[in-house]
Image (cartoon, rainbow, N blue to C red; front, side, top):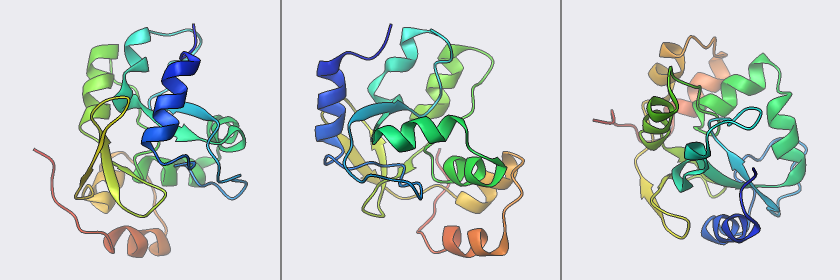
Length: 152
């Protein structure tokens, strides 16, 4: 089962109608809702929770799953991709604790289909390294530019 059209429309409206992923092929205008933590092939509907959904254009949504190692690291560091945990419950908890970088350069957590809250960004460099990512010097500089605080 996929995310309903009504929910997709609400997610797109919540996120300002813009693709949050912003990959090089981005079409800017969002047309779908992307799962930050992938549901996989069918997967649990638990991961259709609003905190796990962000607006995306069709091209970025498709490209995200085929991303190379560098792009995948960037998606994780920006909170656009959240790696699965041992259970769907723990994966959802991880998603809810991981802010994402919005198309406007601000960090957000999603409270519902209609509401997202602006928050301080995660300690992105430490966060990415703890996830086992090999960041370039340029990525470290960019991630260090955002205000950081450790989520509790």
